[in-house]
Length: 473
Image (cartoon, rainbow, N blue to C red):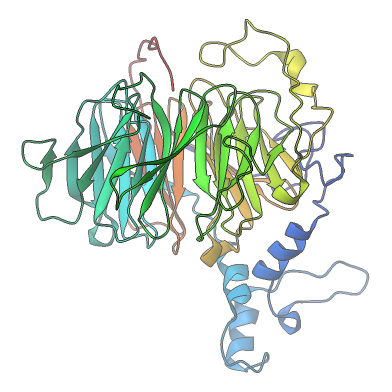
């Protein structure tokens, strides 16, 4: 049976943890995030003050949608229209939790779910060497069916160019391939129907044996930044068609990397060494020296997402938490404090019960969110869209086959989406509409909406369990 669970309570036992879900700036167990980002979030998602409702002796209540529409028609604000905060206040209350509706169903594990920046395209990547691009505005019609070249294990990541004409895909290989999305050819078979050009991320002519876990286009489309299994960060100059920067960034696999903002000067990275690092390309003192390090996770980091302002980011960790960071709190020294259990492996084993209450003695995170599960694969997490929610929420896949949505400020679990029968590795929220798409190892790509289309939701999945593979990413 398809289930939808909602929990609008604040940080408490059950959906989160007995230790404060939202640990606050001091980590002393406060229930509400007490930091500048909390005020910024409220400003971006709160309605005009005169549209709210005050009741003596009670907290100020949120403005109802009807009241806000009346206020707009009466021009209470003097602007004659909704502000961006008014819009976010309304739209953030209508979460994409209805459904699911099946977008596609494949026979191999789904690893990637990504909307384009304008929401017109959706990209899904599968272990079976396939990448599918859907035209969202034409009823999710298949726009491009890509058969990957020289795939090793799986599609680990994809990235769409800012002009939406080209797509890069990576696997457990130093060669990243780039193909055309904007052409009229639907069936893109590598070097048969279309050329998939190879970009060599090796430092020299000899191909080093490493894989790429994460890859991202810069905002101007001129560069690619990649995270590798040989503990490095690579920047590739597409204009010069060569590797322009290689940093020995961490002590273990770098699982995640992204640009901090539109400038492309600052890069965030997350690694199995449990650290998030900040790299400023304008002021490298020596090669490989970060601008700062963020400590707090007790185990490896599976994914990071930037808020886009060059200041805040979130990370998913194998310690079963998502953490919120402010890079102004970073330090120059990195102190590793792990579980102390070298036999534990997140790919095969459950998280140790004793470790759930452990805390890093030098935790620099602003807030910690618990409830989801980060096991078996590199589970991804994100900020909710700025246009519709003011980035009021964070959301994450989970190895318990669900998707969790948390309130950024209170830490409350506001929704849990359940349909899949295998780990949900990736999920993506439409930038302008209340639509969320999830992809899982059961091969299903499904969408969740508010209020949803007129068609009936998908019937429950009933699949034969697959044997667990030898290698997980």
